[in-house]
Image 1: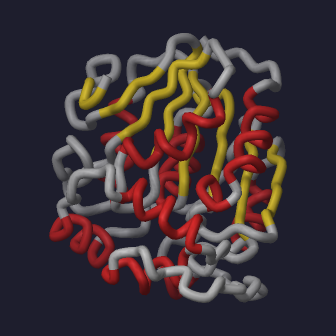
Image 2: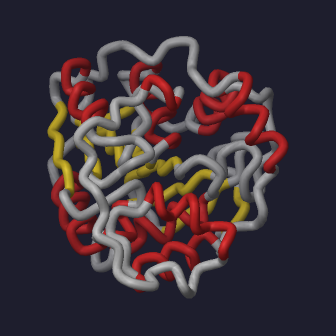
Length: 265
């Protein structure tokens, strides 16, 4: 079901798969629901009882821009969830940054939180990238990838093989072109939320890549101080696209998290 609104939300487009308890997934910055679905659908292979709602954030997929601030983007996500009594929330990178903020805003309705390579301090100059492991690139690993992706992939991908690079390039190609002017304004003028701090008091799983040169892994570990019910795992062989770099490990870990009993209606 592509481009369908979820529970009456007016601003954001979604891609919905399956039936059952809702899990809402927010993607990486600049990509949409189709990419998030490619990352998460393997998790649900052979697993029933979950309604997966993949979100196009403003300026991506079928979602129109809002004001170019993360506060406005968060408001749009909050509107999307307004009719859902309780749900599990997942986010990757910028989507994780927003997901953590929403869990702080509506703690009574977010019953589980999954943060994948999540932004914690969103301004690049404030991120702790110390200790990130150097990649071990396979010769010619970018040969089959469009040249305009080379610089980003060199920074973002930790498992630098041709197989992984081509897999991620193919997934990114599934998305319609984003509104680059809007996204540039968002990153320039209003990238940081008004508050990046506060307690997250739901069951939380934080996943990071030790080769992630975009978000690092230390800020995510430090986030445990705000999350009394959180677990943390860092994958030594993954970068910023952990679900595509180490898909089997990602799927097994997330399935274990989702299998933990929690009240989600």
